[in-house]
Image (cartoon, rainbow, N blue to C red):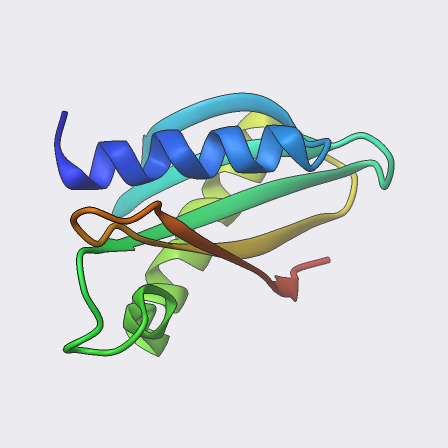
Amino acid sequence: MSLGRYGEHLARQYLEECGLRFRSANVRIFCGEIDLVMEDSARGELVFVEVRTRTGTAFGAPEESFTERKRRALHRSIQGYVNRERWAGPYRLDVVGVQCAEGRNPRITHTPYVALT
């Protein structure tokens, strides 16, 4: 399993433990890919999740690699998904950072990034 897929696996487990329900993973649409699509039933929201996985912090924390350019591209993909699925409710974008240092337990950070509706 690649580092990125491992990070997505850990992020999914973490989010499910937080009460979110898994809908799909690695959704290819338009110009990009949506790592995870979850549902927050308590709030009636779809949650689009960008997972950033790193083995160290030499280039900053994993979530710091989520650039404005990546956010804009992901937003276009999210709009395409919402339209394709005919989702009429609220939705948001979250960023999950996974740091996997050798010999240590993975560290997960979860940032609800922005409400999109």
